[in-house]
Length: 294
Length: 320
Image 1: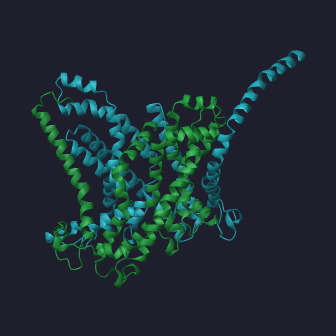
Image 2: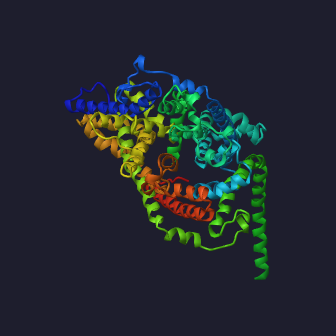
Image 3: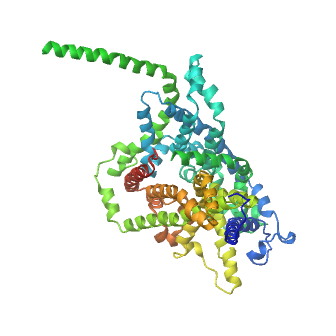
């Protein structure tokens, strides 16, 4: 491991092999994304193969697909719905998850085992799609954005990760606050939560990504075109073969349909791609916590 | 005898009382916690337990107008309809095939990636690969579908452009029953390998550096180091990951299959969950679809509990 040791020929071969493998893996990861990206910039009059098109020479790329999408009413309203689902969903999810995780983390709480059991049963046993569908429609959530995030607002897995984080916090903190006469609610709000920012961010983002990406709940419960989130619009664009309301001649005429398809996913992924480098470490931290517990 | 017994009982009561008092005191002391948790538990009862209650329609001839409790009982008819149908084995086969196939590809790939990242000395390469490898985990399958189209589409996918460049006929991969299983398994490997490597990387970080120093003193080569120190160190993690995945073998990845499949490939693509969706939501066969969901839920429970038992026996601590 130390660099002072002279590398033998076999060690050099080893490192060459490792580095070459990683470069190959990097290429395998980048090429599909790059080829989709370049596809989204193809002009209508593009001639040549896809390999040719992978080089963004200035005379053969255009932003027509992006302009068409951003100028389209349904795209903007879908993006707005997705942002609302993201923020409302994350707030709702944390509102239910934090107290649950905190409660389960108090070792002296009478009845903790029972409460833990109540949380664990649905984790181990899922009754399936239709019983959930009956519930959500019965609650009158059809055609509301809440139908997308409310059914998944508490993930038992996320709760258990958060619980193990709370358990790691030193007990003395709470004890000394109790001696000073702080109520349990004050302890949670004033002492525990300020110390838990990393885990709140991590778990909040887990939920957020999940809600942002969800298309299934939206497909099940939202029929109103005005309430469609992005993934549903994307799916409709991707599955359309050209003669579709999303490809109205006037709106999208300047760009080929495959460029529109590719551009739409990049626009939908932009918030994530922009935020990703900053939040990567929180995601990784979250999985590490989960894995240590598991 | 009798009075003696009374005295003993009296003592028992006297001894017990303080205990129940402290329990009561402990409950009172935590009353704000119960209050705090009550909303979450109400959520749990509504969104997690009412569906379990609703699952009884698996045993009923469900009529939308009659509701869950008003529909007539029909016993196990829905279950026997499913088990005796021709698609039963097809669904089980496809589901298990995709689960195991994905595991067979992505676990070794993740182990390889983790070891390569751990051994790599080129800082920028390591960081870039890590960043790029974790990223696809956060892309939805809708976006993955668009990326797959850019590669596989017969009219302008790069793979088909290559085939055409070599004089071949373009292949419609996404609707080809031979290609489809490979697309599912390989696209999942592409998307999830980086993310699954994290858990192995975490285990590698825990290796005592003394082992490597000792190995260097003894003159071990880098290959031997990997073979005798690195791989044995993550072996327990590999076992746990495999057991965990066996515990969820009936979840073959609904979102992925649902996004990628189409009528021509149903026979090789349909898994339990996609079938439940089509029968339940599209064909309104609620009872039958619920029965299949319950079937899956019960076997899923057994598999999870079983795999957790094995993990507990192997590592000393389980999932819950």
